[in-house]
Length: 184
Length: 115
Image (cartoon, each protein chain N blue to C red):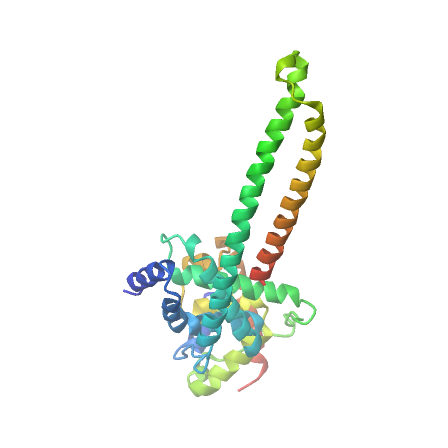
């Protein structure tokens, strides 16, 4: 249904109706913001990047091939913009590798997780994702929070299958370590 | 790793992704799109101008090349007046400079849009 609407609005925009682009902003801004913030870790920067991403998407709308979903195409633009920002400000983003030796991999008790309130868990997930490297945080978030398959992540990010798998493997390991640092 | 996967699934279960409930970018994006659109009209104008310039430059190049090749075949009847021939490189150089100017303007405009 969404795909049909997407195509309908793309046609309207290409016919010169600029305001039709509002549909895409309303529909995809939240997901775009969520993806971008997992990479840049800062709400103000993420908002700017999402704006740039939408403008970029509008400019290159003619190059969008309808074979893929509009959402995947848009998220790819957002990810590229966010990674560009991270690369530009590399010095400001310093991520330390977690201390593997002093941490047992599964130091969280599975039964305790459910006892903690959702709001608390949400905050903890947020602060853990901030500590992680941009690509690892992104892949982990897409897989576990947005429930995208590896194939879908490949389409959205433009990463290869092996790259996604490696990133996911590292992300799982690092997430558990960072997450377990604060004891319940 | 399977345990790790289950554990993370447990951690994320029941959590929804609601990062941007108060995101207000719609008007800003539409405003920027309008600015970009106006910009693209100027670029299209420059582009057409540069295309015409390129065409003229190619035609002049062909004519000059032809006039330089003709004496090689001793076709004296086709050789143009030598005085006119002197002006052609000057004309060609000024036109080339003009084209270069418009092309650099176009490039500058294009860079402006990508910012």
